[in-house]
Length: 203
Image 1 (cartoon, one colour):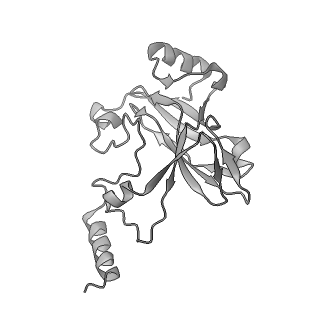
Image 2 (tube, rainbow, N blue to C red):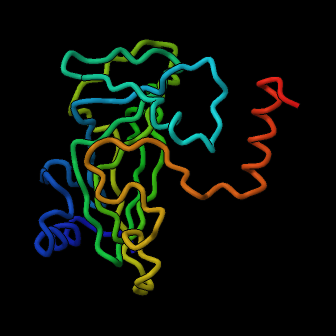
Image 3 (cartoon, rainbow, N blue to C red):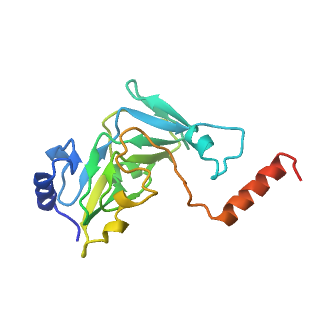
């Protein structure tokens, strides 16, 4: 069941951190607008091949950009935007981040995102300029909207996001980039290692 403005206000009464900070003007009939914070992160260009089993290289592959004077987002450029809001979901509620129509109509594409029940933290959303024009980003732009849904049944305690060993983004306040942990299979790691040996000229 998708939550209405009435449901969202009730959850805020039960937990003031459900959406923080909360602004009534951003609340619609069945969604809540979310905004770009004070910084964004660019993915740094590297001459090396990016392999998904090299977590240290991935962690170092982001450049922080202060938005206090704005950022010109060039055609084709992609940035990660930590939001100005934090959310804290109950165990029986999920959230979906959806783009806003006005931005998609001018060529700014927001990557949809799914939040598991019990997630808490600051989301970082992917934003790509698919238009042929330079676009200025500034703090406070309401680039997406949260849609909340209540689950029909309570999930198992051990399956909740906060209890998962791979919940890398739980309680995220400072930016966290892509995390792969132990998700790559042994077969995938073997292929990566073989490719790297070939690229380096090893037999």
